[in-house]
Image: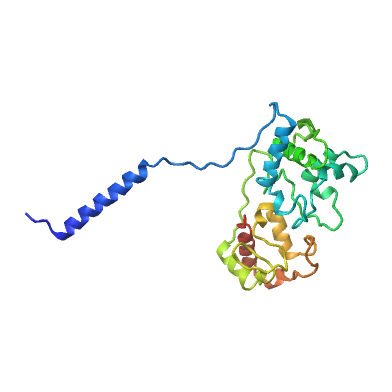
Length: 264
């Protein structure tokens, strides 16, 4: 008995699909996991190991390079070359490690001339380093021209601590897609800023990773009161319009914030 063509085609398709499914399932699967938090409390670690761990944090989780450089002018913040030596001479009565720790945990306590108060606390979201990571990062910064003598006891026990465990992600009730449209059209943000693949103007800071280094609170305030939030070093003052609170509707504003919070 001859089988209909449709039946033959269907049977052939099932065989092909089954073959590919078997082949795909036979390939070892690589599971992607987020990096574990660094924990050095209670363990023995040499200064060299501590500095190496801190250097890794500087380049990765700490997101320090978005604003700082070592040996060249930073994009938003001071050059950190030699900070281990300079730190001990910055504030009278404060050692290098004390100044560095304060700069990480309370960055607004002392501002380098010419740079606004825009650095977030590194042990709070969005960066959220834990106590061990703050310790290692401090050691790395000390190593830039200074002596590494920071101990875990120098880092406040409250560093990186959050009430009730890990901090909850803040979600803005806006539409990021609609906010992207506002960014490109009515808001005219692309006239001065770059955001990933959108825009290319160097008039204002690149916002492609703004949500990695700034809090939602800062981003919301910056749109409504740009001058009050400080001007990023290296960019002209007074260029960003202060009237978005009047020109954007409430929905457009919330949508724009929601879009900016996706830039990581």
